[in-house]
Amino acid sequence: MDLNGSVVVVTGGARGIGLAIGRACLAAGAATVVLADLPSPELHAAARQLGERAHAVPTDVSQAAEVEALVSTVTARFGPIDLYVSNAGIGSGSGLDAPPEVWEQMWAVNVASHVHAARALMPTVLERGRGYLLITASAAGLLAQIGDLPYSVTKHAAVAVAEWLAITYGDRGLTVSCLCPQGVRTDLLARAMGHTSVQTVVAHGLLEPDDVARETVAGLTDERFLILPHPEVATYYQRRASDPDRWLAGMRRLQARILGEPGLDPPAES
Image 1 (cartoon, rainbow, N blue to C red):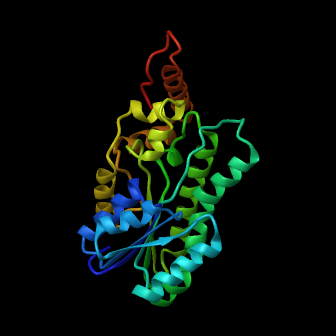
Image 2: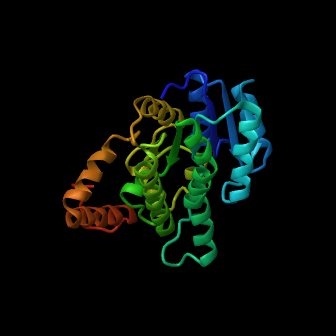
Image 3: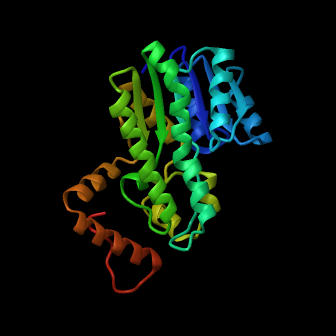
């Protein structure tokens, strides 16, 4: 994809990876970047930070009607959307104890928001014969997230949504990429410091949001389906597929190490 002159929408754009991707798209020549996030002064400040080609549209991406309104508003003001970055996501830090309302919120933000985006975008994509959807999942969507069951499940589902869209519409004009970073230094991670799920990714090293954004733009330029800012994730993914039992044993050892259980070595294969 050539971002020069493009119209870009980034959800979860007020901070972290979303804001960094918006900045990187502008640096790559995007004509307009629209940052969408929950209503807050921070969202409008983020757009001002990026300059006159950036705009803020408050949006709750868990609500289909608000995503449809976002797409309609952007299209009316700036023209057809060339790239939609469906980036908003949340964690839970929960296991089997997660109550139904946590599952519902996680599903609405981490999965349904991508479906809402695709539904709103597809009529124009099919009419134009082109369009790009980038779904931010996580390395947890290819592997697993120790300590957070709803996050693991919903991020796997996000990857599945991206795969299904690529298969179903890939020959009809829609290009799909799936961004799967591991540990990134964001507010979401900072708020959960000390939890088992966060300690797992911290142990493997953190990237800055701008590092993720640079790799994302490179992946979009190459039109790669999987964009992996942490290259080691590809190795883990291959090991998981080639020997699931060995990979699961490695993950159990990693969990034990993070929890500080004595007498267990670090995982060799995960």
